[in-house]
Length: 162
Image 1 (tube, rainbow, N blue to C red):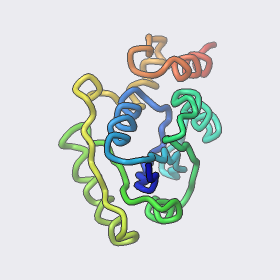
Image 2: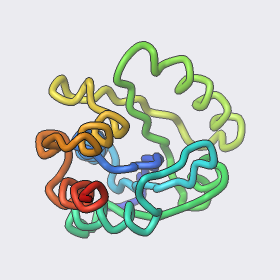
Image 3: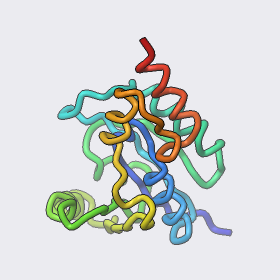
Image 4: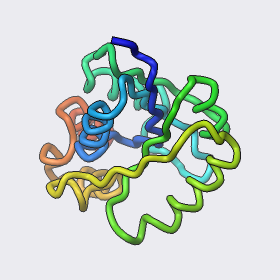
């Protein structure tokens, strides 16, 4: 098998959720390899350090050979070009996500014309799910196990234990 169709799935993944993992699995049905790019977003104050996020994702995907987990900073388009991606994967949960995602897709296309942005909708069971909601549930002592993989649930519990 020629492993040359690389897709970049960028995000802050603070933390990674079952919805993110659903997008990774579905992207693997289209592409040979998916690079989960954990980006530094200067506009966000993350709960987990980049090393913690990378470790949670590595543990969750069990070091599968078709999934790479890499931290990066700077422009997503530049990182996509650096890794030889043919596509940038973005998840769309609701119509409200579209305008922002569409603008980013156009900018990325201008910066790195060789990569297409591919929008994937989450499975119905994950359509409402986002990292902010998961962090709020965990912060308030709720059960996050329906929303995140076990290693992430443990990490969230440890962050908020008093």
